[in-house]
Length: 500
Image 1 (cartoon, one colour):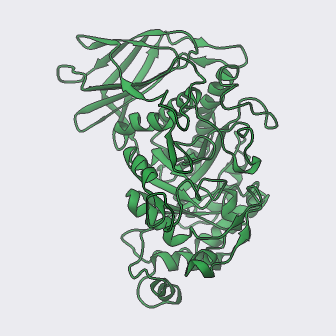
Image 2: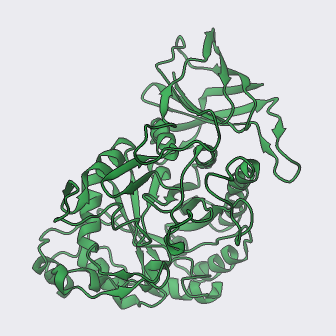
């Protein structure tokens, strides 16, 4: 098998935000996971766990989406500001029926973004909220001069406005966000986005419109039809981004399979459904190209990842699951797809950051675990801000059962600051593969500056509390440079990163 790369053929810039994250008020994602409060005996900065902060800085989180998810459409932001002992409590009806005390609100989220050095993506409440509520939230966060919400922010201890990079009008409005018809949502979107004012013209907020959660493009076409109808020239349907959601549910919605016990038996079904991400992207790209020929609207895959049955003995509404080598491969395959489609796909947010679904971090009390997915994100850092370069396979055979075929190897390559970053995943559960990587037009003598691998003996291997790490990032040396060809031996179920 051969992978041919043309280092001179550039195909678009890989936005750093493709490696973004999502954190919802769900289970132990916020509370216990990210936020423990200022009085906790777990070391923290303004209530945010120091160990989690340090780990997340290691993978250089570029953007964080909050507060949901389904939770966003029942979240009223004014309940989460001011003195914490005076904040309203609510029942989180979407996730476990637990009490939400609103101790983690706007100030706490934006402090987290400051500590991580990442962009802020706010998801507005369209389901039970209003244009007025969202407009005032934007004013509260970004307003300048004299205005009611700006004065309220100052009274709550924040003199200077924050920079909000992205604001979404609703979430999954076809489902938990209101069961809306696409034309109805489109009218609400057009109406609401009008009142999301830019108080800092130099840093305009990027407005995000809700897209589909399936491969059916009816929602996409109907929403774009309505948003483009009589829209002034240059407004691009009043949006900057259009969302896609896709989860890897390996078996059925009712029986998704266990995160660890079924990693082997559902291996190829899982990777086949991860590969389906490309089909969904391509279908939506084709529709967008009909309306937005200039490519101004970015696709935003703001929820993606593996979704399995909850861990036995945990609250079913908390969506807590382990993270194995299967998740590492899902991450590698998916991130390669995002890289390949970087001309249109400009942001993605894995679901979710801590303790929920395909997390990069797990916590339990004072303990913290870095998952296999964490290490894939760490290895892929070199792609951020790079230029995608042309790459294609010869002899890349399909493997797996008839109902779950996948290519044996996934890959993507980019160039930045004189370094070519190549990522490769061997999707075979059991078979090693020898791969010749031919790099054309490198314009210098080829030298491997760094090579890493995430791999383990079994596909069900994972990292757990109180134990040494089983799956981690290690040095990779199973390669040999011969002129402009690198002979690489990829172990079964492995993710590899090489830099030249």
